[in-house]
Image (cartoon, chains in turn orange, brown):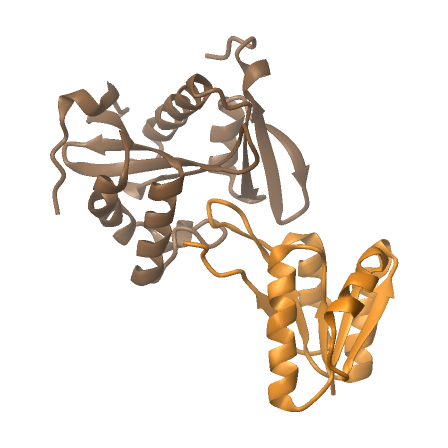
Length: 115
Length: 175
């Protein structure tokens, strides 16, 4: 029952990556990272520990592949929300689709205040 | 805590639709307490995408961050802050807008005047673009943005992005 993370190339998402790694380590389980194809090499170079599987996905199919991974693992999904400069939290259509369709719990990681 | 409103700091003054005198001020960190008072009694059901934060400590953090880094305008009625609009720097020349009017003063023209004054202030400072994010069902806010000349540039069923191009807007002669 590995933790499943949706990684995009945003600051919030890289912070969520750290969070998901810590969460998986605490549980003593692995981590599945679903990310767009263009990001896969960079993610693999960031990963030094075993137990992290990187699944590259065509950009348009990231959500479907994320949900598929969560079904296989039976665990939870970690996603990142964006915080705008005024502090508004923007989920976006795709994160909302994940929330509504995930088979289990979804952790929405919000970046902390920079101040 | 009360703030003394010096005449010299007022950008403008007007009467709202109920005849209450409102003054507009550019504000800085010295306004934190007066702003905190407005947001402390702000209707939580009108929170927009997580701001203003509900928890008092987070509200403090948020206020300090926008006062430190943003361009802030307030509308005051006597010593009471009743509206707040802020532009937070994004990319060069680009700012994100957030605006809140206390429920006791909504629907009386305060938001429109505050927004107009902030846009004028931003234009003088050479900014080129103001954008904002709004929930799709927040019709009161959307009407305010449309009247100020904003155009919707992105949107799904949850959130919309609206934008005002300042160079173009200055030729439109909007009332």
